[in-house]
Image (cartoon, rainbow, N blue to C red):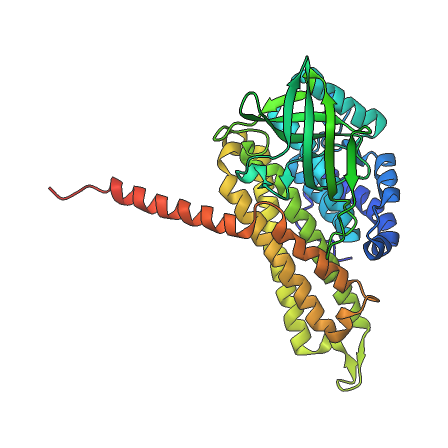
Length: 401
């Protein structure tokens, strides 16, 4: 519904949109059920595997489709219209492979094997870095999850939180602290009996992502499990290339917002008001809100897809767009919240009923503020950059003799 927008540039884009819409239509049938129960949507992932969704961002050389940044945003926005939870959960898998493909920090033979298991066996992949005691390691914390050398390998102990896809992953990576080396590194872990999945995921929104806790009890790792060191101040796959892989996040929340827009347009054209003696879509205040919604969607899409196209085309500046990536995430996610709120204000008190999808959209869209980078971090970094730029410009001005 109302899918006519200028982000679809060519026939390939249209094919990808049609592909995503077809999958989304099937997932939408049970999306609300999984939201209600909080259960992990295994059937959704069986469908995604069957449809080849798991290999969208894997390099062609290893059997994947190697979608561009722009193209994966098109697909993920549509999937999120059906289920924000499913789009976000599979999104971390897609983002992981996208960042690995463009940065290539691991030994190539290991990366090739991980790609192969995803393409041929349907294995999902995610990285687990967040801890309840230390926070997000990428933000500067030191992991309490540790590894110790043991013969030719390592022993892993600790606990990670917000481990999206935990119920279904067979292999994943973790950031852990190597005590003997006083360094942080990324390790590849195969799930076995020493890996405990702890069902802590009972939350307000994005209830079907399976973002549980994972505990490691003397988990043995081979020497080859050490993938790459994470050194402070040195670009890595999480921070390199301006972290553009994270633009999937605003695309997902924009998808949820457009689902709310589509619903409220249908609702407003079918809801008759005796006091108006007409359908509520004819009320001036309703049209005002619809206009605001459309402007917010247009601005968000322009910002998001404009940046993605810039990143895809101009490889020489891919490392110089980190502020634009952060601003885009901040703007689109906050706009998405406003869009859903406007849609709810049109429906009034009915929007709070579980018989309508608006309350689910409202809960899901709030989660964008808690995906990295967080609002406070964006504002601080942008402010510091502006201040520094101003001070530098003053210092460059010729001084009176």
